Length: 224
Image 1 (cartoon, rainbow, N blue to C red):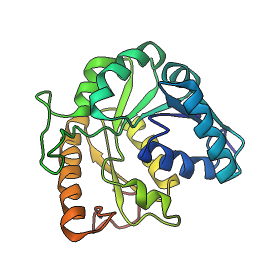
Image 2: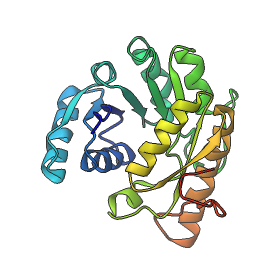
Image 3: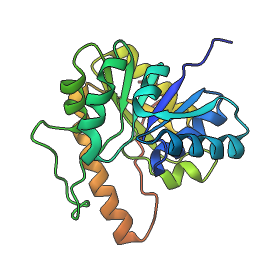
């Protein structure tokens, strides 16, 4: 069996990051939780090891986590997005960087407010440059769905200009118990990022905690 890539999750102590970490650790992926505080990251890693029984889980500061990983997932608040990307830029040359950040602008987080650059994903590509294989995914799957266990009842749209990177992240979505769907080029990430605000509003109005999306009509899960 081929060696699974090591995944660093920056923001791994937050709700979405820790939920993804739990799913991937249980699926056998080596995980490095990243945080601004290495102590906080290691405490979260210790808790995750205990919860999943997976030994290959560690905690580091964000830069060290990115250096150690093959794939880097960025799941941080939009307010910290640019600064963290600047910090990890030297560590992600040639690596897949999965941007899961949504440009929410409090207090009106249920209103679509995309940045002037077009999307958080485009900001990530501009900061990291062409040497990083930037993809965009996991915007529309809530932490509560991931933490519930079992199959995740929604799809994950995956965007990238690099087709091989896109396919690798679709595989990660499938490994997390969701269904990865090829959403096309990185510019299309704006649609999924905007949809997050709409889903937040739906959650509030219908008093639910896990509104998601499902793409219908696909002949086989994960295929085009």
